[in-house]
Length: 322
Image 1 (cartoon, rainbow, N blue to C red):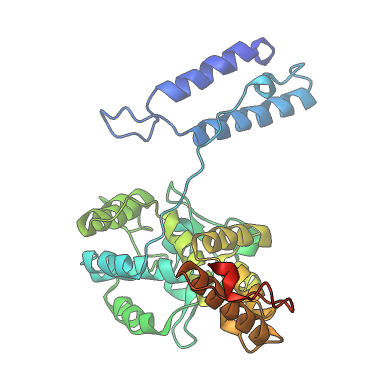
Image 2 (tube, one colour; image 1 turned 180 degrees about the horizontal axis):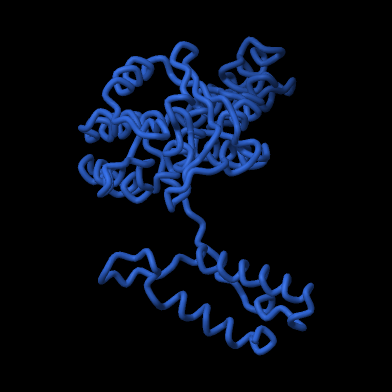
C-alpha cells in the first residue's frame, strides 16, 4: 500500500541505488548510478507521491524528507585547435568524422544529431532544421523544448562532405543521416547513443591520446568556440536552442573566465593610465614626470647626490652629501 511507505523505505532505496550497479552497466561492471541519476529518481518518486496525495491515497510525501545526493559539478574539458586536429585525424572513417565535426560546429544535442534526416538538411542554403530528436531507447520524438525547434547554419567546408555522404549513406525508412547497423530483419534505425559515445568518440579520443569526453561536451565546445568567434549571446542561444539566455550566458561566462581577462587593461587604456595610451590626455606629462623621478632615484642608488626640488639652496648644496 502507498500509505505504508515511510521515509526509511526511501532511504534504503537510495542506498541500494548508490551501492549496486545500474541496469545499463556492462556485465561484470561494478559501476553504480551517478549521483545525478539517483537524485532524479528521488525527484520522480516525490512527483508520484504528490499525485497520490492529491488523490487522497496517502497522507504525506516520504520522498520530501530524503536528502538527494548532490552531483559533483562537471568541468568540461575544451579541446584547443591542435587537439581538435588530432581528434579529426583519429576519426579515420569519413562518415564518423563528418558526424563529430557537424556536432562540434553546430552544437546539436546527441538526440538531435541522431534524429537528423536528409529532409532536415538544406545543402544549397548551408543550413539544417532541427525538428525532431531520438531518445536513448531509439524512439523518434519531439525535441527537448519549443526553443529546440530551430534553424542552424552549417559551415561551408562541410557541404561537399555532406553531399558525398548523402550518395553513400544507407537508405532507411526515416531517411536518417546517420543510421544504425541493420538489425536481424535488415532494418536500420537511428545510430545508437552508446555506439555514438563509445565506438566513435571515445575510441578516437583514446587513439589521439586525448582526455575522455562526454558526447555532450562537444556541444559545450561549440558554445565556447562561439565565444571566441565573437557570436552574440542572443544568436548563440538561437543556434544552441537554449530555453533561456541565462543558460547560454552561463557557458559564455565560464569560457571567458578561462581566457585572459584584459578588462582592467582596457579600462586603464581608455582612462589614459596605461603605457599603451601614452598619447591620451595628460598621460605624456605623467610619464615624463615618472621618468624624471626614476632617473633621480637611480642617481641616488648609484652614489650620485641627485637633486631635490626646492628653492632652498642650502639643501641642494653638495656639501650636505659629504
